[in-house]
Length: 291
Ligand code: PEP
Ligand code: MG
Image 1 (tube, rainbow, N blue to C red):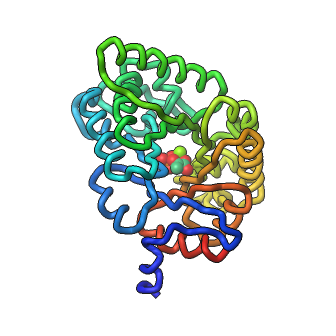
Image 2 (cartoon, protein in one colour; image 1 turned 30 degrees about the horizontal axis):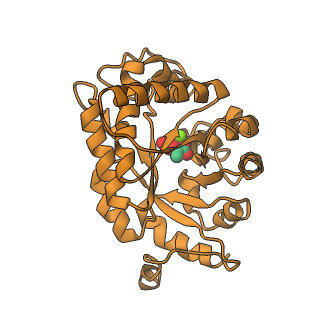
Image 3 (cartoon, protein in one colour; image 1 turned 90 degrees about the vertical axis):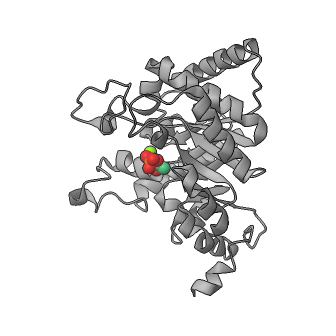
């Protein structure tokens, strides 16, 4: 069985009606690149940048981040790498960011909300991403979007960053900008948001928790925390329809992206990229070829 799945590692899977589906990797550090390439990752669908900021005494600088993102982009080029901007909140301490105690950190000052109020943290990351984009296929992904204004605010900061890099004579390249679909607000606003971005990526872990109002870490409510719940599937269908109507692509990068029972649902609704932990990649590729 294992040997049979191994044969799928190098496959670029298509459905029986010939739709190409990209099977990409969720990564949390550069150390995982090799394993992902071996598993057959067609790029990175979610690079979590939190590790760069954790377990250290000060914030990472722009140069250090640019080097990390450049290595990642080079390793997977010409496949895309979707790099998510810092998604951290009061549940995880970071030296250099003052998180106050919150009763509900999952509903609190985190992700893009924090970043937009701390340009001293956010802009070095954005400039580093712009600097990495000439060497590969870099796509920037924004977490926890709940309002169209947040997208506008990030675009304004990106414009500032480009001007600053130009003034300093530092090269930067083209990039796509996308948002995580992981709050109910982003689902309800999907049509408006789709006009402002190049892609959606459904974060089924948080989308399930927020749609069902069931903490993703609390085993007492695990019964409700199910991505296959009709309410969550309806939310995903709605976001996918908005993406289709706006002519942008949509991927899935939560744990559910690897589930053989849900992959046909995602693909039938127009999802063109599924991103998962590398070990799940061969099985997901096989699954796509059977749709
Ligand atoms: C998600 O919410 O589904 C997701 C992919 O992001 P994270 O698990 O890092 O919150
Ligand atoms: Mg999330």
